[in-house]
Length: 319
Image: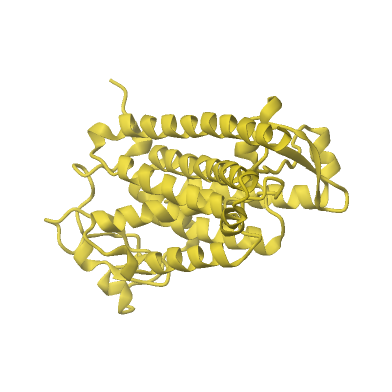
């Protein structure tokens, strides 16, 4: 019988709290990495700490030791950083090797990086056979601040969630958040387009659903991780809105609607996908593989829905 080692850590075989051996641990101390129960988890600037570390009684582990607990997160951050450097410095080389820095637009327009460093419309893509835009747009970034902010949040949230879920379920969660963000972009564009045709321009102004606006970045996936973190906290009996995670979500939601250049659909779509995926993935080990596959199935369904809505949006624009 095969065993999904990557998914380890369901409720029945979670490690015990190192301070209270009779209690299951849902988290690890962000400093010493020891398993801790909800009662011993003390909120820290990054994740949670055990009482000893919070009082300065434990040494901080070397960064290399911490990184090894979240290998998928390390790879994701590395890929995002490398792609940002490559697409910023040598876009012509990336095009030669088929690694075109493609950005998703809600109407399905592909764009290629110009030598000047920005993006120019190229062709209708989602609607003529380039569905990978829904994926590639989530690994590319517009500028240093953009990639730095998303990379930092991914690093912090990944070190909280990956040790808890295991690699397999964590990858499923990240995938769902990424494609949820892409679906949100296309859905908002479709709704805004229909509202604009009907003369209801207020909807488009609120949602920011310009069908020709470029959308790029890992924000959808990062919002998915934030949504899942909220689910984890709720499962531990903690009100997420009274934690650093809740404050982070609230602040980012406010900025999403205040800053015109931020994708409302991408952020909300990723957040909702993360909440749904998080609820599906917080199960016992016996159900972990089935639920992980269900989340991958959900991600595939969101891809199909995005492609359908892209066609409907383009049809409405040219109709």
